[in-house]
Image (cartoon, rainbow, N blue to C red):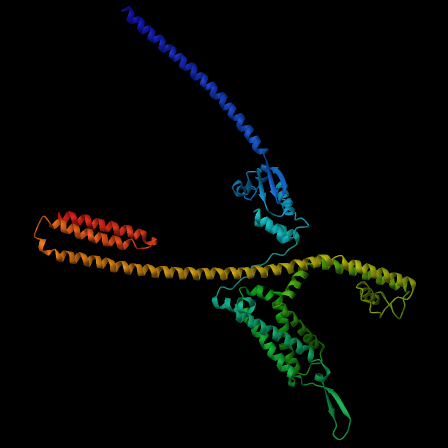
Length: 541
C-alpha cells in the first residue's frame, strides 16, 4: 500500500515537474519569438533602408550613370522604372544595365527622373532622335506632345473622311491625289487648268491683244483703237472653260465634305471662291458696258489669287504656308521694328535735310525712302544730300540690316522643321505601303498553302476510304469462303474474330497514313473500331 501511494505521489510530482517545465519552455519560446520578431523587424527596416538607398548603375554606350532606385521608381510605367521591363538589359558580369542608345539624350532622360518631370531637349540632339529616345524609354506620348509644344511644333491633324461610300470616294478623288491613279489624273488636270488660267490672265493684257489697228483704204494712215468686245476674243472662251472646271470641282468637294462649316471656313476653299466669283460678277457688268468702272478692274485683279490654288497640289507651297503660320509672332515683331525705324529715320532725315521741297517734302514722303533704305533696296529716286542727312541714311541702313536679320533664323528653323517633317512623312507613307504590300503577299502565300493543304487532305481522305472499302470487301470474301463452317458453333466465334481482326488491321493501316493535323480523327476512328470489335465478340460468344 505504501509502495503504491509512493509511486502515485512520485508520478504526480513528475507530472507537475513536466508541466512546470513545459510552461517554462513556452514562456522562453515566447520571449525568443518576441526577440526573433524584433530582430526580423530590425532586419526588415534595415532592408527597406537599404532598398531605398540602393544605387543603380546604367551604362549608355560606354558612359556610366549612377542613380538611386527610388529615383527611377517614381515613374513605374516607364522602362527604367519597371523592374520587369529593364531586366532584359541587365548585365550580370558587370552588375549594371547596358543600353546602346544616344548618350546626350539620356542626360535629359535621367534628369527627367531626377527633376520629377522636367524634360529639356539638349541642343545637340535633333528632335526626331529625341522623340525616338522618349519612346524607347517609354515615358509616354503625353511627354512627346508636351516637348513638341514647348519646341513650337504644330501637331499633325488626322484627316477626316465622310461617312458615305460614294462621298468618301469623291472626297479622296479631289482631296488626296495619292489614293488612286484616277485621283492623280484629276490632280494633274486641275494643275494644268490653273496654269492655263494664270497664263491667260497675263497674256490677255499684251498690247497686240488689247488694241487693233485700223487702216483707211487707199491711204497709209492707220488708227489704233482698243478692243471693246472682249467676249469675241479667244481668251474669254478659255476663261469660261476654266471657270466651269473650278465651279464643278468646288461643288463636288462641297457635297462630299465631311463638315460643311469647316469646309467653307478653310483658307484654300476661300481662295477657290475668290477665284470663281469675279467671273460671275464681271459677266453682267461687261454686258451693260460698264467695264470702265474701277470696281470692275479691282474684281479682275482678284483673279490673280488663283495662283494660290496651286498650293493644294504643291507640297512646297504648303510648307511655306505652315512656316509663315508658325512664324507669325516673329513676322509681327519684324514689322513692328521696321515701323519704328521708318518713323524714326524718316523724321530724322526730314529735319536733317532742312525740309527740302524737291526730295523730302514731308515726313510721310520720307517714309518711302526709309523703307527702301532699311530693306537695303536703294532705288535712288530719293537720297539725302547734306552731311547730316547722309549720316542718318547710314544709320538707317545699318539698323535695317540688324532689324531684318534678328528674326530670320527663327523663320529658317521653322522652315527646316516642316521640310524635314514632310520628308519623314513621305518616308513613313512609303514604308507603310511597302509593309502593306508585304502583308498582302504573305496572306496570298498563306491562302495558297491552306488550299494546297486542304487538297492534299482531301486526296488522303479519298485514298483512305478506298483502302477501307477494299478491307471490307476482303472481309466479305473471307466470310463467303468460310460459309460452309457457319453451322459449327465452336468455329463460329473464331471466324467472326478473324474477320473483325482483319477489318481492324485494314482500318488501322489506312488511318496511320493520315497527316499530323488529323491525329484526333485517327484516335477517334481507332476507338470506334475497338468498340465495334469488342461488341461483335460479345454478341458472337
